[in-house]
Image (cartoon, rainbow, N blue to C red; front, side, top):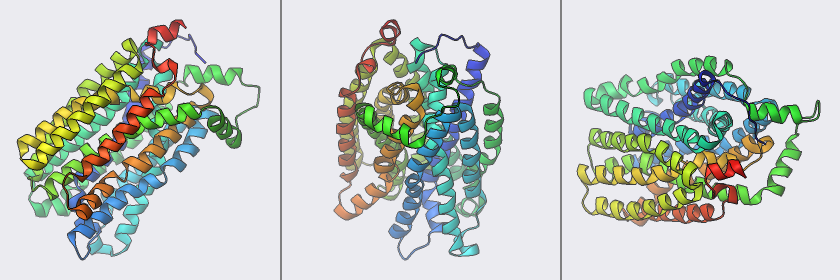
Length: 439
């Protein structure tokens, strides 16, 4: 269902800020958790071996993803029933609680077994809230955006991820290069997490002063008085009438989420622990790579408006698959700051060409009344199965196989899913936005 209701430039700017802010907070936290994983492992998950300690930390990183599908269904249905605005206001408060809790938790040395238990609880709160954050914020954003520029506006969500990664990597670089190891362990690593306590309430205030999405308002007006879709009927409609949309968009999400969790989260850990690169150099290279994502995602989103989603997706995924294999192998054979920087930057450039169109694809394939729920389920299931546990899978694969090349085969599997998903997208994702609007 489309609407021609005009949106003021001021409200559009406010929606962009509100939608991007919560998503940036979510990914900023994830970035710093990965970048400080070595310290968190030592302080919260002491074990008989360093490998076991790291596995416990990465499992805690992944446990939040176990509740993301639940959060996605609950918050997605809530957004489809009562509106995008109320759902987004709730998610950012939950997110701030989980992030802030991590920043103030006492360590294992102070409170014993309660420390890792509380860390897991904080991850569960974050996981539930982020289950509805990305899809809900993206839905709000594209429903306000001009029809012919929805790919561009949707890409702002991926810019927020890249910006969060860049800020996280820069914060980690500054802290690890300026503080002594003792100060870093004692209090330095907490600083980025405490940022969530500040940004959460600010985001809530901004979101509560938004208008409701024009498309959702039109949908709600046309709905029979007093009728709201029930959970059972909504899920039956979604899975019964839109299986192609679910599977194709999930394939696109799989290649995107694996690229993020392997090359933004796992690779810095791999470079530090397995290849022996200095932690400050690794963080600096990650900052440059995520800056490339930040700059290039809007370009790919705009290109998807002009030439169609599938054309941009396919070219990006193919280039990414080739670059990832060649440059990862080069880094493993000749580990150095230069080879790591080259791999991260070039792979990030290729990633941006399927990251940019992903948010609009996730949402425009579903009708308005199922959009938030459909996007939440496909996104969170893909992230749960293939993304959130990627650092854990790959750490274990390297240890179990004894091969430093093991992670790249995991990436190649995700590329196959991404290509299959892109090829199976409905016709609306093939035509440029101008032709869709005219159709």
